[in-house]
Amino acid sequence: VRSMTLAGIEQIGRRRLPCILIFGLLLVIGIFLRLPRPAFEHGTLQRLRAVHLQAQQGKGFDEILYSDYVQKIGRQGLLGYPQLTREYIDREKTAKVGTLPPLRALFVCCGLVWQNVFGGNELDALRSVAATFSIFSLLLTSAFAARFKRPGFFIGLTALMAFAPTQLHVSQYAIIDGVFAFWGFLIIWSLWESLSHPDRRIWRIFYAIALI
Image (cartoon, rainbow, N blue to C red; front, side):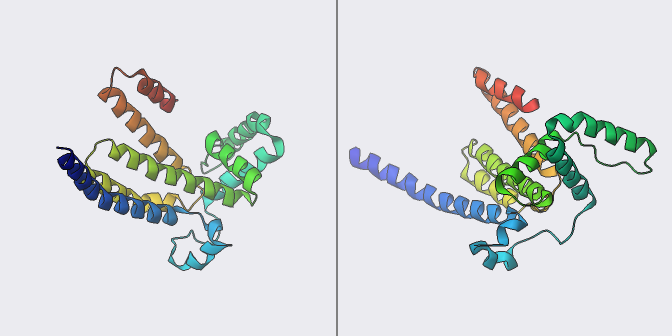
């Protein structure tokens, strides 16, 4: 009986090993494709710049606004946020075209923290934050898929997320879309866990925090 049990465990291990290897490969490729442009300017990754999907040179319209917000908050501090908001409201009253508000505080503050910790300019900091949240989305959805305990579904969803064109795009630019996507995935997962395990209060708390 013991030999049969060990044989069964060994067989399960052999079945899981290819899935683990494929999953690891997908994660490595997916994370690599999401790395921000500054990561390829120096060091070992500089040799791999040619095979990476990097953002184009220059700044987009939204990127200019977010960079400006980070710069102003960096000079005035968080206490300057009310003044920054009032300036935006006054500017919008006479503007012919609407612009992005400075109220996406999480994105702006994360960019400021990144710049203070790792250096660089505001644009590179915001792009790095966007790339980080896109990587978090990949890891989060993979963990969510693993909860279904179906290897085919797990590998398939991870592959879709690893090469998702929209996710790759938002990871390379200083735009908040990747942050919203991560938070959306977080809410869906915590909601599913809350409904699947109504007796576990921790998931309801997690879901409430995600909604905030």
